[in-house]
Image 1 (cartoon, each protein chain N blue to C red):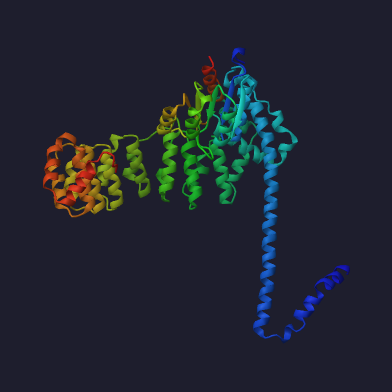
Image 2 (cartoon, chains in turn brown, orange):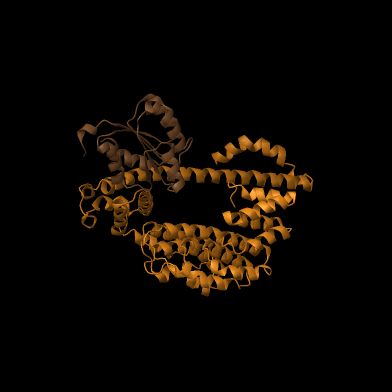
Amino acid sequence: MSDPIEKNQQILLIDDDELILKVINRILSREGYDVKTATNGKDAMELIEMQKFDLLITDIMMPYSNGFEVISKFKQHPNAEGVPIIVISSVGTENAVREGLNIGADDYLRKPIMPDELLIRVRRFFK
Amino acid sequence: MPAIILADSLFGPFFRKYFYYYDSYPLVIQIAIFLTGVAIVTTVVAYSSILLRRGRGYLVDARTKKINQFLDNLITDHIIFNEDVMNGVALTDVQIDLAPFQKPIFRQTWVKQALIDRLIYFSSSFSGDRNVLFRRLFIELELEKLSFKKIKSISLSTKIVGLVELTSMGIAVADVIILPLTNSRNRKLRSEARIAYIKLSKNDPFKFFDDATEPLLLWDQLELFKIITTTEGLTIPNFARWITYSTNKSIVSFCLKLVIHYNQHEAIPAIVKLLDTKDHYLRVDAINCLGKLKAEEVEEKLILIYNNQPLRCQIEILKALGRFSTGNQINFLRNEFLRSTDFDIKKNAARSLIKHGRQTKEVVQMLIDTATPESAIILKHCMNPLIKY
């Protein structure tokens, strides 16, 4: 368990893979983060409208609107100011990474995910 | 008896009305009535079977969903949140509690199969230490025995499932089992076996190239290429070995692509020998490979053979000259551009000239000034840096 100061940070986790969603949710919740989940871009945007998050973790390939669309919409939202974004995606091509970082992502993780690595990267944003 | 009475009271008047005089109807009407009856019965049977299958499918889905949730929690608790891993214990000393996975429910084959599927899914979703533990769990529960059993099955689709399971979990399969499958006449099995061999073979992952008699289809090449270039720790051999000795043209063609990817300049002598092959598709691949490797030493040879080649090879030679950009063949390219009446030749000659950069700046300008309107359009088209070939 990490520093208690970090607790109650709000994280929005978006992925259409329910297994990944469930496992990452458990990993982050176990660390004391308050995690909300969405399985597609549409639901994610609804959550963003309702509350402010401290970190956004999103997949790229998703139904309705993909991760890039979610990021660009999120970036324009008043609730998004200064909120870091981590992309987790099985699309690991140079172009996808470049596009993700260009569009405003702060970090890019390739699937399959290393849970410990994700945790370290999340903690880094809250230091 | 009551059923017959009920049926007679319900349908009796109908049957009596229409079938009492059945024998006296004309033959055509009798056939029509018979066929209508057959059609009605067939439709009812077909719809019932669809309904039954859907019902059964729904039940299986519901059962699988329920067990998957149970298995996901079990795997997450014991592998993802394994206490030893969380406490930083060295991977070799990490203990997996097998007891929850050995409960009576796991004696059922379908539950074991669901566990295999979930482990594969977890394995493809998470990497690092957890991935090693998924594999360890798979082995310690002796689930690989089920997969090996599948490989020995007569059914080809079952064999494929077994192969995919073992490949996904990184379980080594003996050459005697897997090598014959790499030459199976069944395309899917052959493809999976080849992928499995490359992924699992420790010493010589490309050994099956030696005896491959069945063709390596383009789609299979794509899949294999992805596996070869993304599998970590793979020993990459000198592909000239198969370019020289393989009698399987698709293997030679695939090796040429791998030579380009791994930039194997030591394979150039073997590729040059391919320029004499009778198969012009293979010659195209060889010239393409030489061009991409920038094997300038073969430039003269390519010019020598140019006039005796079919169109595809000529185009590839022109492209290769552009890739070399030595400046020695500027006149040749200019002449081809001016002389040829074929659009593709003109276009590739122009493109290769322009690729020379500064060396051909004046030549290209002179061609633009003196060319026919059609040739000028081709030149300007080739000069557009946004248009890729």
